[in-house]
Length: 576
Image (cartoon, rainbow, N blue to C red; front, top):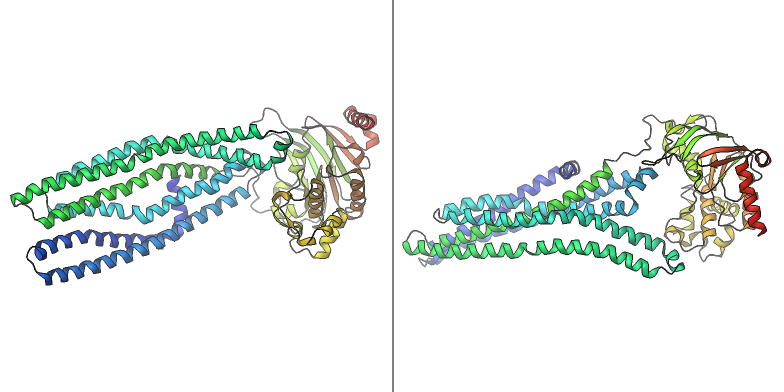
């Protein structure tokens, strides 16, 4: 997966990559030329006392050094730009892929894991690309060129290269093989830390209300300790790499000086050649060391790439049609025919054989016990899920056949959990209609019974809203969400228990204000309180995912025991 990911996202930057390769090659060749020139100065200038020769070759060395520095700086610049562009593109692709997911796929991965994959995992692969362009390209050139130049200086000491390089490679390979399982486990443990932390931040009020701070502290400490233990184990193995490298490097240097000194004493080698050979051996071992950085990073990047690939290779269960319908003459008609839905891996369906119709100018209420499938049923209409059985159609066209934007433009959804985005009151309302004027926003707020508290805010429509709407009350958040749906004037309104946080008086005023606005629209309301839906044109009673009653309030009182039971239980609660 890592190779496929790199090949796909680096293809647009092939020119930059070839430029980096060329610059790294030139810079590495220049670095390889310097020890040989230095040996030449020692043997032919220093030993003979020829100052002019020293200055001439020194000037050549200076020029070569300038070329090396210029090539290295330029290569690192373009390599870094390419790596950053790669990370940007992968994050963007991940973001768009997750944005196309239905609630089923989001639930499968989980929000904490998706966040980790789009941040930490992308960073791991991006760092691999950066290190490749800045270090790895020059490493093989340095190793091959270093061996050639070392042999050119003295063949008699070549056996030291043949011993040092395999010993270093084998030692580091053994250490890395012990680190790979830890890298895989670290990403999983990081997901868990993110999950626990996210739950605690979002549920801080519940935690404090039930005085569960000590329990949650221990829970986070457990997840954090698990991650720490794995990181320490990996870190211990990683900390052994540099001592091993330095041990081999220093032992090799001592061996070169020892055996090289013998050869000089025998007259088989010159001092300059010994100096050059030692430098080349160090360059070869440093190239091996740089390669080990890649060997260390590759497994972790491969794990991260696999996790990224899981998201990118997951197709949404809600797939837009190739030639989606964008224009329909009818407006506001909703039909569900033998609709069923089963969550992936579930033993039983959530909805089974649900059928009813709703027409413009009518209100349809959906009621049932907790877990009856009311919210799931509502989510099938805007295709947040796709029905596993039957057909959901809007204006006579199956929702699967619509262009998504066309379908969503017909629907105004107020979800069960009202969510506001960080920004202002105005920016949240413009999620419903991007070009809404101030007059339209105030009108929607008046209908939603939210105008009074928005006027009381310091900046009115420009008053700040925190992420999730946490700086306003639950009832205010719910009314702003209703105003956001109202401002677009859709053909179909979907209210998913959207009045639960309102007091009875505000609920009644809001419903009276809604009547003229929704007179020509189709209204679907999921409700818990019976008294709020007694005037509905039809009431759908769900029990265990099946329709057990369909009719008006009076009809259901006479024919549906489940509805009667719900009514009686709420009347008893009110009396109590």
